[in-house]
Image (cartoon, rainbow, N blue to C red; front, side, top):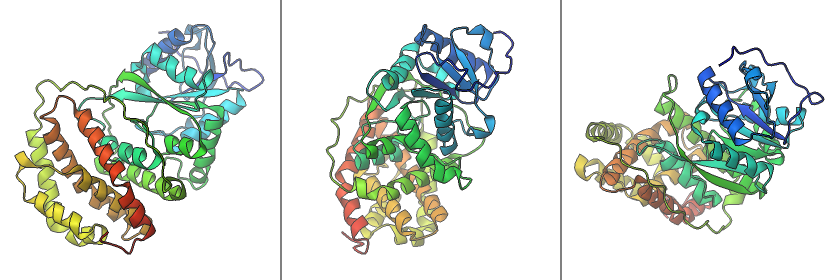
Length: 401
């Protein structure tokens, strides 16, 4: 790869965006950017894409591409989620350079095939879609915050089939980019630019068209900063806030999309989660002994009874029912809205319950050929229990529906 020279800033008057697609790259290593640029060149060989990056890239090595600098100060420092600042940055760059659509790509997007990049880009550039979202193929024990909370909540409340509502690779029409930038402004204006946004929810409320594309296997970054507690609290809190803000929308009945066939995820060779399951169950049992007072402020008696029975179950038979988990998440969402307790403490009290769900999920999927089958069953339970949430949302004093 040629030595990277700094990319000059390109204004709207000098930019030549070619087909009107701006590709906004996250900060990434030279190897990662090289893979992405090679795949983009193969995906759009004649269109002359406009590439924006906070990094210095070897522009001379890609004569068919046009480059523009993305200010590093306006790019999120997180590689595992897109934030409010990222969407503000994307819209500003698109407007400044005359782009009609935006493709936002994360550091690991080099794993996406040329056809996947072409699908995401063309969906918002030449088709009627406003939001193009990937459907990743992850290992069986990966992405479980998404599987346990983000996906089933978004599906049930916004009637969305999008499997990864917090995807880090997205295609946006110009009006979708403008809407997300508007939603992001309230965070960036108050120095909360790292807050995650929810493009699927915004698109659904606006009546915009969403397309989802299977993009194959996805490598995972080994995070060197935030732990599970930090990530779960950040993204769950952000989703709860977004759901609260859009309550008048999701309380109306909407027909759920037809179920798609679950992606077939092969089992991990030689995987044995016995020790991990025991550790998670132990964390749940310890929390059951210490968090009774807090949980009793959030959960109704029936749910507490279900947790009591679960705490006395041995590891081999440990199973949390899908409906119990759905009601637990809904009750935590309601407590977030009512501020029943400090929100930081609230999300901290959810973590051992999430670990109990993960332990149960591991046990259940150890006996099935495809873990996605259980994820879809969980999503169906959230769908079925939506009336429970709506009832408690409207009449929160009815603690025991």
